[in-house]
Length: 132
Image 1 (cartoon, helix red, strand yellow):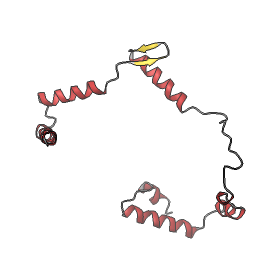
Image 2: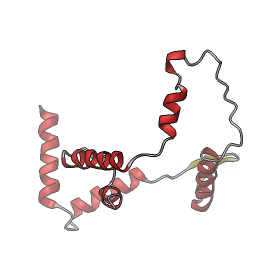
Image 3: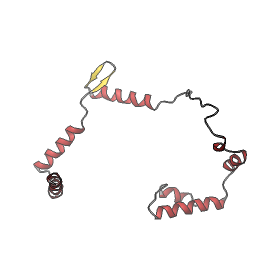
Image 4: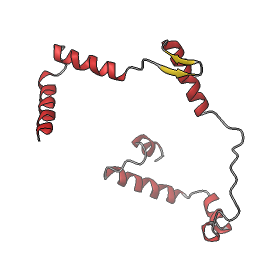
Protein backbone atom coordinates (compact mmCIF):
# COMPACT_ATOMS: atom_id res chain seq x y z
CA UNK A 1 0.00 0.00 0.00
CA UNK A 2 2.86 2.37 0.81
CA UNK A 3 4.46 1.75 -2.59
CA UNK A 4 1.17 2.42 -4.35
CA UNK A 5 0.70 5.68 -2.43
CA UNK A 6 4.26 6.77 -3.24
CA UNK A 7 3.73 6.04 -6.93
CA UNK A 8 0.46 8.00 -6.95
CA UNK A 9 2.12 10.94 -5.19
CA UNK A 10 4.89 10.98 -7.78
CA UNK A 11 2.31 11.07 -10.58
CA UNK A 12 0.50 13.93 -8.83
CA UNK A 13 3.75 15.83 -8.59
CA UNK A 14 4.50 15.23 -12.28
CA UNK A 15 1.11 16.66 -13.21
CA UNK A 16 1.41 19.56 -10.76
CA UNK A 17 5.02 20.48 -11.58
CA UNK A 18 4.87 19.61 -15.28
CA UNK A 19 7.85 20.68 -17.32
CA UNK A 20 7.98 24.28 -16.12
CA UNK A 21 11.77 24.17 -16.00
CA UNK A 22 11.73 23.66 -12.22
CA UNK A 23 14.66 22.08 -10.43
CA UNK A 24 12.46 19.00 -9.92
CA UNK A 25 11.87 18.69 -13.66
CA UNK A 26 15.56 19.27 -14.44
CA UNK A 27 16.56 16.50 -12.03
CA UNK A 28 14.08 14.05 -13.54
CA UNK A 29 15.12 14.96 -17.11
CA UNK A 30 18.84 14.59 -16.33
CA UNK A 31 18.26 11.27 -14.59
CA UNK A 32 16.32 9.98 -17.62
CA UNK A 33 19.08 11.21 -19.95
CA UNK A 34 21.79 9.42 -17.94
CA UNK A 35 19.71 6.25 -17.80
CA UNK A 36 19.19 6.10 -21.60
CA UNK A 37 22.73 7.08 -22.62
CA UNK A 38 24.99 4.39 -24.07
CA UNK A 39 28.50 4.95 -22.77
CA UNK A 40 30.33 1.90 -24.18
CA UNK A 41 29.83 -0.68 -26.93
CA UNK A 42 31.71 -3.94 -27.26
CA UNK A 43 33.45 -4.04 -30.64
CA UNK A 44 35.63 -6.69 -32.26
CA UNK A 45 38.78 -5.07 -30.84
CA UNK A 46 37.28 -4.42 -27.39
CA UNK A 47 35.28 -1.65 -25.79
CA UNK A 48 34.53 1.48 -27.84
CA UNK A 49 33.61 4.84 -26.29
CA UNK A 50 33.91 7.16 -29.31
CA UNK A 51 30.48 8.06 -30.74
CA UNK A 52 31.61 7.76 -34.37
CA UNK A 53 33.02 4.28 -33.73
CA UNK A 54 29.87 3.23 -31.84
CA UNK A 55 27.77 4.33 -34.82
CA UNK A 56 29.99 2.27 -37.16
CA UNK A 57 29.63 -0.81 -34.93
CA UNK A 58 25.84 -0.43 -34.71
CA UNK A 59 25.52 0.19 -38.47
CA UNK A 60 27.67 -2.85 -39.28
CA UNK A 61 25.67 -5.02 -36.85
CA UNK A 62 22.29 -4.12 -38.37
CA UNK A 63 23.54 -4.31 -41.96
CA UNK A 64 24.71 -7.86 -41.28
CA UNK A 65 21.53 -8.72 -39.38
CA UNK A 66 19.24 -7.66 -42.23
CA UNK A 67 21.55 -8.47 -45.14
CA UNK A 68 20.31 -10.40 -48.15
CA UNK A 69 21.21 -14.05 -48.17
CA UNK A 70 21.69 -15.56 -51.62
CA UNK A 71 20.56 -19.04 -50.76
CA UNK A 72 19.06 -20.13 -47.51
CA UNK A 73 20.16 -23.61 -46.59
CA UNK A 74 16.69 -24.75 -45.56
CA UNK A 75 15.38 -28.09 -46.75
CA UNK A 76 12.01 -29.53 -45.81
CA UNK A 77 11.58 -33.25 -45.70
CA UNK A 78 8.94 -34.60 -48.09
CA UNK A 79 6.91 -35.74 -45.09
CA UNK A 80 6.85 -32.20 -43.63
CA UNK A 81 3.37 -31.44 -45.03
CA UNK A 82 0.49 -33.81 -44.52
CA UNK A 83 -1.48 -34.57 -47.67
CA UNK A 84 -4.54 -32.74 -46.19
CA UNK A 85 -2.43 -29.59 -45.65
CA UNK A 86 -1.35 -29.28 -49.28
CA UNK A 87 -3.16 -27.01 -51.75
CA UNK A 88 -4.98 -28.90 -54.46
CA UNK A 89 -4.73 -27.97 -58.14
CA UNK A 90 -8.25 -26.53 -57.99
CA UNK A 91 -7.46 -24.46 -54.87
CA UNK A 92 -4.26 -23.24 -56.51
CA UNK A 93 -6.27 -22.14 -59.56
CA UNK A 94 -8.66 -20.21 -57.28
CA UNK A 95 -5.73 -18.51 -55.54
CA UNK A 96 -4.17 -17.49 -58.88
CA UNK A 97 -7.44 -16.23 -60.41
CA UNK A 98 -7.94 -12.46 -60.49
CA UNK A 99 -10.51 -11.04 -58.05
CA UNK A 100 -13.83 -9.87 -59.43
CA UNK A 101 -14.99 -6.31 -58.94
CA UNK A 102 -17.71 -7.57 -56.56
CA UNK A 103 -15.16 -9.46 -54.41
CA UNK A 104 -13.02 -6.33 -54.13
CA UNK A 105 -16.04 -4.19 -53.14
CA UNK A 106 -17.05 -6.76 -50.52
CA UNK A 107 -13.51 -6.85 -49.05
CA UNK A 108 -13.37 -3.04 -48.85
CA UNK A 109 -16.81 -2.97 -47.21
CA UNK A 110 -15.65 -5.46 -44.56
CA UNK A 111 -12.49 -3.42 -43.93
CA UNK A 112 -14.58 -0.27 -43.49
CA UNK A 113 -16.84 -2.05 -40.98
CA UNK A 114 -13.80 -3.28 -39.07
CA UNK A 115 -12.40 0.26 -39.02
CA UNK A 116 -15.69 1.61 -37.63
CA UNK A 117 -15.50 -1.00 -34.88
CA UNK A 118 -12.00 0.16 -34.00
CA UNK A 119 -10.27 -2.82 -35.56
CA UNK A 120 -7.74 -1.05 -37.76
CA UNK A 121 -6.45 -3.54 -40.31
CA UNK A 122 -5.21 -1.16 -43.02
CA UNK A 123 -4.61 2.58 -42.91
CA UNK A 124 -7.71 4.60 -43.83
CA UNK A 125 -5.87 6.06 -46.81
CA UNK A 126 -5.51 2.56 -48.29
CA UNK A 127 -9.25 1.95 -48.08
CA UNK A 128 -10.13 5.39 -49.51
CA UNK A 129 -7.62 5.09 -52.37
CA UNK A 130 -8.78 1.62 -53.34
CA UNK A 131 -12.47 2.59 -53.81
CA UNK A 132 -11.93 4.00 -57.28
